[in-house]
Image 1 (cartoon, rainbow, N blue to C red):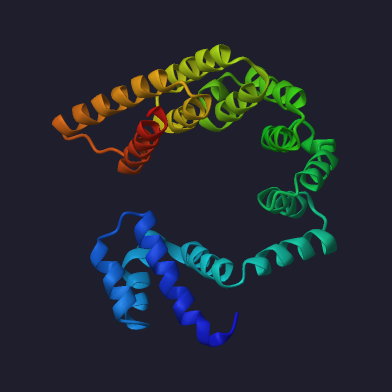
Image 2: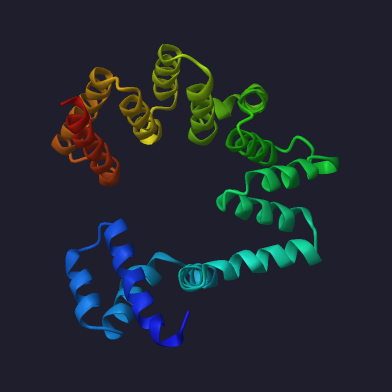
Length: 252
């Protein structure tokens, strides 16, 4: 990126951060209409205090680098894996390949590391299952996820593994079975992480009645929390109501 564009890139980064994190809208105007100083003030006031110690500052630096030159981090991780093919370096590289949708190569690396002292390691098995899912090998992905559930009952309440399990079922089971499992998992986990994927699935399925039932319950939950002054994740409800608007448009 040419150097003269960097201040504008930082401006855009600050605006995006402010919107995604529901910051006071005054910040957006300050960043846009007071170049350089506004962006620097935003970073110092809103971003830096959210981190502690050198690790936090490294995160800020990494975020800026990724925004300005998104390939730099990938090339660095790739070189590390090439010149020092340790387990960590190879897994980091495979993770980035997965992010870049190079699913086949990511799967190959994950599976190559599933041996010796790392064989059957839970995080690695999850990654192999995820890569198999993206590669379209749903039976293998399902087998691996079910194996994880069997090894550690606590994972039955894990949003991450449970969501992958449900996504696999979306590809392999009939809708009634999938809806039944979504409801069962949501009851077991008892948090909001499954609701948005479930609503998205219902909209794609065209089951507007079930989607509206879920949204009505979400709305009732929010009303109850407001009455009792309970803090909650407003971003979740904002996304749920966005899907409700999409539901209204499709149901017409």
